Length: 496
Ligand SMILES: [Zn+2]
Image (tube, rainbow, N blue to C red):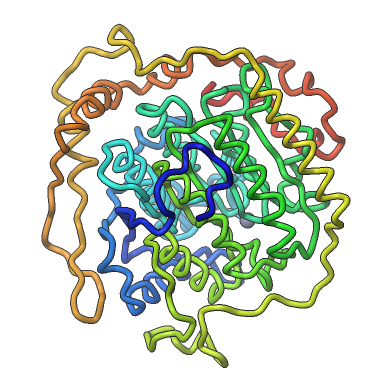
């Protein structure tokens, strides 16, 4: 059993977990435009593989409830959300100023159904967080989510709304500490920035660093104020292979689990870190990538698995299908079953593909140095004076109950559970209401109160230092690259 030496890990790793999988059959129809590398169709391909490997029957398949304006506005600026709701390909010519202001138009194009797309992928991630908070499942999966670059009032890197930040805010209603881990090849800048000054969320990003989008994620960027040492960045170079990657991932994440002791873990599984990605330059196999899922799962902490980047879409589908199997504790066979997208997987029609023979530019000495630096930072966190955490928000912080609170909970609890027919395709029409189990009643009470409160985060994160104009300038030893690409002050004044 791989436990990484973490005392929290319990039980054999093979123990079954209850898995909820969020999928909207419409999601594959959204289209960023001709030539754009981001293809929501990859979620439909993943789903088809899951269906034909027989994995859907081993988990609860849920259609996400679309996130509403007010759900998105828990993180995003009102005017940005209004803009996303209103913009269409037909009207965008009249809104050039707004497009520029919100960074919409090029990497992040306006396309038909853009706002519904955002509502769908955010609804899946927040819905997964709600299910984990209720104790309804051990692992929630939303491969349509993981859009880690979106900022409070700006689209970035194919991302419009940051479903990860929204899901973490939801988890913080119940959990004192939430861990975010990002294995996309790009730095998880939007999530790091949102939680840069709090000790309630630790962010850990493994990414290509140096002359690469988005430019942030220097090893010396460690968080600020109360959040100092609660942001971890693992800068990597081209060609990293499974062994090199795991020589950092496991020791670092094992230590993080030991010293941070999160109540929930969010793992962004961006598949652009795989070998042969259209935009990436790493050399990970699917098994190497999935080893991160396997390892984080082994700690038996509520786990939210999200998608992210991934631009060689046949490999994205392969990867997320295999990782769904890992979540379920089943090893699926390499030979691929016949299905509607079978022709994408030729000539071998296998799940796994060999990594390339590209050069690994990450020398042993460099990797050892990075690992030592990060473990040193974590040891400072370990030896920091302990700060008492609130068990839950005190009643005085809760708003008055009103009729909306019940609607709010019904809304997130009444997801449509999809029935699956013999062809393993989803059917609709049966709505399953899930009842809270008695032992989770106390959690439900907390949620009923805080769900109402759009300002909850300020109370819940009360220990957080408010950012000020100096906060980014004061960061010690920030590299030129790290600092020059730091988001503007406007963006750092997010939620905390
Ligand atoms: Zn990426």
